Amino acid sequence: MPELEKENIHYCVIKGFSIIDSLYSKNSVVSRDFGDIDFLIEKENVSKVNSIMERFGFIQGYITDKYTIEKASRKDILYWRLNSHQEHKYIGKSEHSNISPWLYNYIDINVTIFEGGKMPIPISTEEIMLHTRQKTLSNNINIICLDYTYEFFQLCYSFYKDTVYLSKQESHDNYCLIKFCDLREYVLKYREEIDWNDFIAIVNRHKLGNQIYYTLFLVSSFYGDLDIDNIISKIEVDKQIFLPHWDEILL
Image 1 (cartoon, rainbow, N blue to C red):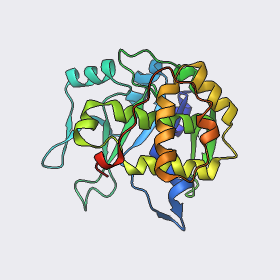
Image 2 (image 1 turned 90 degrees about the vertical axis):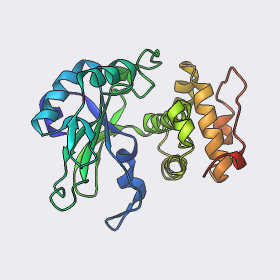
Image 3 (image 1 turned 45 degrees about the vertical axis):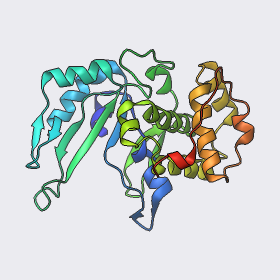
Image 4 (image 1 turned 30 degrees about the horizontal axis):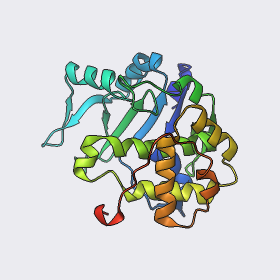
């Protein structure tokens, strides 16, 4: 993170790692697992970030059956760059790798919070990066993350986005309980910090009501204790929202 700042690269930490410390950490015990650290950067800074990652020993690749890091082919790297919201995953050896060979650090470099690739981007990353705040984690590490309103918006859209990928649907991972829990815990803790009027304005102005309504209706119905019906009712949708039957979902 300091290296990104030294290079004047605007970034923020998003998804699970940005909320674990504040929502799931108590007395140095973390109750939520996470698989990687997600950074959001502007696309123009990808080459600079790639150089920094390589300098710190991270490789764009995958883990082999023998628990070694294999560099991804140029074709795979380009495929991710052209067709995804992120670069091919970066993998680096963990300080614990000498005693546990499958322990590695995984980093995702995202260039948008939306689908990316050939899909039009409703809100530019440059615009989103104007809405950040600094946060100090319990281990005194400073990170930059999105402000409460945009962070909640990003979490909502991330949940929706994972439900539309065919691979997620086929593996029945599209209604992951931990993501339901993230949204619930975020509302319960930061209800007063979220600017709900701004949140609704963002959603409606960029015509993202179908996606966000879908997400919030699911989470609100699932838990029943969020008291956000007045928020949901102000979200503009332009098509019929087909919601799942809970008895058909593998939980």
